[in-house]
Length: 104
Image 1 (cartoon, rainbow, N blue to C red):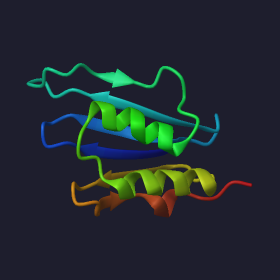
Image 2 (image 1 turned 90 degrees about the vertical axis):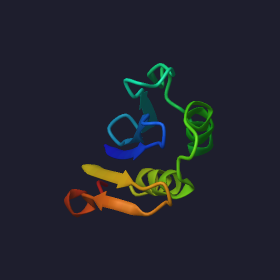
Image 3 (image 1 turned 180 degrees about the vertical axis):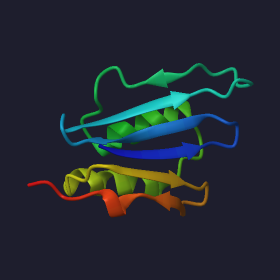
Image 4 (image 1 turned 45 degrees about the vertical axis):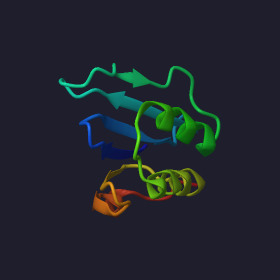
């Protein structure tokens, strides 16, 4: 499973990625204790990266586009055991990809 984490300016936290065992995209949004927006998660797996992005963008603004591109690459490469933390400008704060490996 790849996990990509982004903290929005309002404190909401997005966790999204690709589950290689299930072959599915997923997301969860965790509300800041001060935020009025409730937490949310995918009840059915988004079928495409575009659907994932549409769902997440409807809940949280400012999620960087490179995060979604990276999740798509994880799906294409069947990447697992990866955790990436993203900055608002689309740069990577941390990436545990050294632990990930492609699975045939």
